[in-house]
Image (cartoon, rainbow, N blue to C red; front, side, top):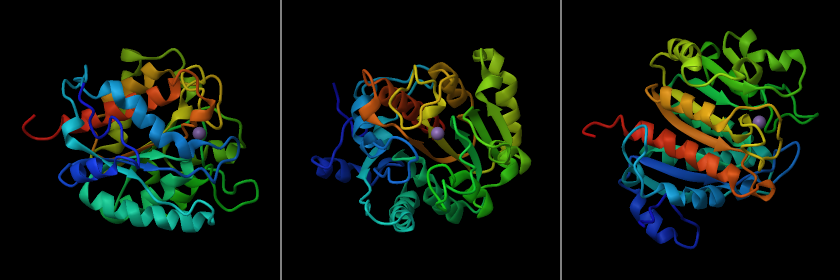
Length: 307
Ligand SMILES: [Mn+2]
């Protein structure tokens, strides 16, 4: 078996990975921060577990896209973050490191809790000027405060719209189902975006999702699009290892259908967040995250010329 850069890397073999990163069009980078959670911490340990879970994907050809992304992907290892500092300082450190990476690569970031997405969007907005957003999550993340604090992992979507980082009409949420006041739950829709709740998706997969996928494609068009995938969009049966689980969620197959069918959008980056390995069972959650990242990368690599 070939062990690729995405297959397994840690700070103990970074010479091998860093040497291979320079020329790669795609990069995977860990963002090991979980200081902004409302419930169970532990997502800072996700990057190493998702890398490890990717091991068995790495000498294979993706069954839908019929390519292996591995030779196009380098591992940028994990960001170095001031974990005991206030959130604005952590986010500034993320912005600085992400800015350098996104200037050189199409990046996939492995969180970390969902608060890391806001600085990643700031970098993407500065780079691309306008952004669409596809947001898989059980939670709307549009609360205007975080239990009395100004910001956290449940406010970043609200902040991104308030800051003008994403176009509200081209913001799409998928899998939403948590409790919350109406103003937060419906915020994206009130701003002109789309929300596909978990309830609206129950029992739908494959061809039954075709009209939803067509509507998303029409809404986003060719606008540069950022994908953020909170692993808690999945039902806890598929992803128990997360900080804020919400029963009644999506299946892994549903998420894969979206990722496969939307791969032609003008994606400019992705993150997968909120995997918390300490609550996982049989690596179910890290395996799901690794598969989603692999599928996203395969879809994007398949669009490169000459393949
Ligand atoms: Mn969530």
